[in-house]
Amino acid sequence: MNVAIYPGSFDPFTNGHLDILNRARAVFDRVIVLVAVNGAKKSEFSTAERLEILREALKEMENVEVDSYEGLTVDYAKRRGAKHIIRGLRAVTDFEYEFQLASANRFACPGIDMVFFMASAENSFISSSVVKELRRNGADVSSLVPESVIKAYERKGL
Ligand code: ADP
Image 1: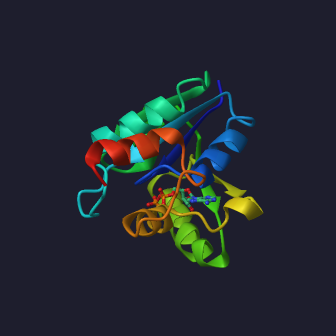
Image 2: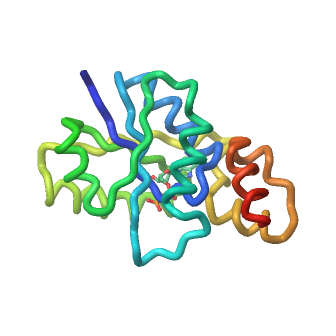
Image 3: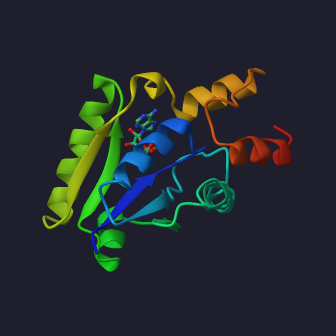
């Protein structure tokens, strides 16, 4: 079975992430969406909340699994027998960071490769930060994120 990991902060998960996931799961037998836990990063949603949002949003997708991990994604991938890590690319600005990340992953684990999907034009401006900024200032973000994100915002009173 050809398994791939799609790691990210997903704080929160957006329709941009969803687009990349849908395209990745058309290529791989199974995709594991991995909430990468990074203690140093300040997040709006806790790991448990992010997992709950993802499980709700992706529950109909049979070849998709949701998990979280604190540590190197390549170590998690090795443990799960995955040989590919999925990432998305929006503007050129993403390239430099992703290129560095790919090189670091290759250094840590040469047997695992990164696979990149380009953002669709209509999703290319969507990022978790944009969603947070808009929501914080009272804008309607319901067309930018799955419904489970809106529900999570409402539960938190944000
Ligand atoms: P991280 O904090 O690890 O960069 P993110 O949660 O911001 O994680 O994003 C995870 C991955 O999804 C990254 O590769 C990012 O470039 C990609 N991504 C985020 N938003 C979009 C989008 N609108 N279109 C395509 N890819 C995206």
